Amino acid sequence: MAKVSFHHNDGNVDVLDVDPGTSLMRAAVTNGVAGIVGECGGQAMCATCHVYVRPEYLDGLPEISEDEEEMLECTADPRDEDRSRLGCQIKAGEGLDEIEVDVPASQI
Amino acid sequence: MTAEAIAARPVPTADWVTIEDLYRNPFPIYRKMRSEAPVHWVPAVNRYMVTSYQACHTVENNQEIFSADETNSLMKRAMGHSMLRKDDPEHDVDRKSYGSVLRPKAIKEHWNAIFQANHETYLARLKSAGPGADLIWEYAAPYAAENLRLVMGFHNATQEDMQRWSQTMINGTGNYADNPDVWAASEKSYNEVDDAIDEILPYLRKNPDSSLLSGMTSMPIPLEAIRANMKMTIGGGLNEPRDVLGVAVWALLSHPDQLAQVLADPALYPTVFEESVRWVAPIGMYPRETTRDTVLEGVQLPKGARLGVVVGAANRDPEVFEDPESFNINRPKKPHLAFGGGNHYCAGAWVAKASVSGIALPQLFAELPNLRLDPERPAVDAGWVFRGMTALPVRWDAK
Image 1 (cartoon, rainbow over the protein chains, first blue to last red):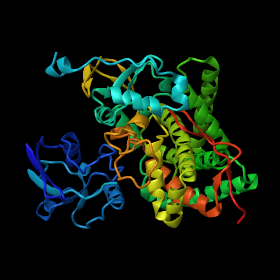
Image 2: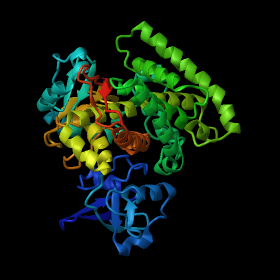
Image 3: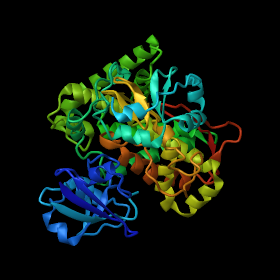
Image 4: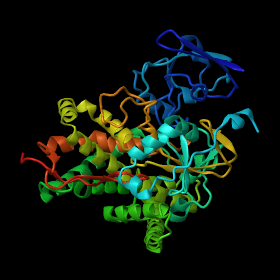
């Protein structure tokens, strides 16, 4: 299992143990994590699974694809050039046994 | 039986629901149904209608249990087997064939200029029709149709063709009464669209552009899938932007305080768009079919159950939206289900937002001073599977 932590603005943290290969968006939506919407089901068509990845985990991430890049320009909360990613494009357990992200205040 | 199934309750029947009442105004019916149970068997509709937000959300995020590939689908008959009636992985192959045509970068680089030109054409048509003109039929419908024609690449058709194809095939998808005249009109359009595609593909191979059909020429996708997906896109890409545009104008003209707020701050038009599709979802219901016995929000459903996912009802669920029956651009932002969710999330969502809230709404209100409802002829909103304005006579002052 891989460990995913979603840090919320109010200080609460949702810590999930998920099957490796599960996207952060899917893990959040399946487990009812607040603040992650995932409207488009993981096609990088919306920008409602925006997360800020904590710096210590950035090196293990896959490259940002053209589609993800386009959507990161459409996020409701401001994009952070280093830390912003779409949760649907990051899979837990693939080079990352553990990952921690901050959930933006707004997705829509 | 699982513990979940034992604890579940049987599906209640809503035998008091009629198609006529739904068509006129479905919202009081949805309110009553939602307060009783998240799912009902509705004999008049011959479906299980899913009306709570949570139940609709669950259905659209689980294609293993709630399949889009419906048995005896009228949509398959009217339009062919499009991606909208496929599950992944088959759906995903078709979906990828749309490439980046409908995405924000292409909209910025290609489509916004075309939408702007079309807006100017049909605004001129509305103005020449003069005060008292119907905003739907003089502006919103041809504007949406011409935008879609060019996005799809039907250079051998007219916006009037697009409107006729869209409406007749949509009527086919809803032809539960099996009316032969409806099928005849639908089949005529089906054949006309196939002919238009066959004619335009060789042209687009030689003269590629930014359109959907042009993109198809270089995709490994069978002609049958292209034909079905194009028909689905004609049905799903014209009436919907037309209807959200009509509902948004009607809502603002009926709520003077909110109109004043928007006129003072045009940055609010995207919010107007989102609230309009929440309030009246242009596609109010779409089908799914259960692949096994299951329990949905505590209600038992048998295998093979034909569901109607009523996002038009989910979007007014008081569990999620405060004072849900009111149009209110100042409500707290919450995700609505008007574009569907999960893998079938509307592919045209960005195009609709750009053409309606980026161009049409701000410019209509800027170009037509004191735009208002015609006091002599009332606006008419109608429909439930598809809902929008069927008449929207408006007046304005000379500039």
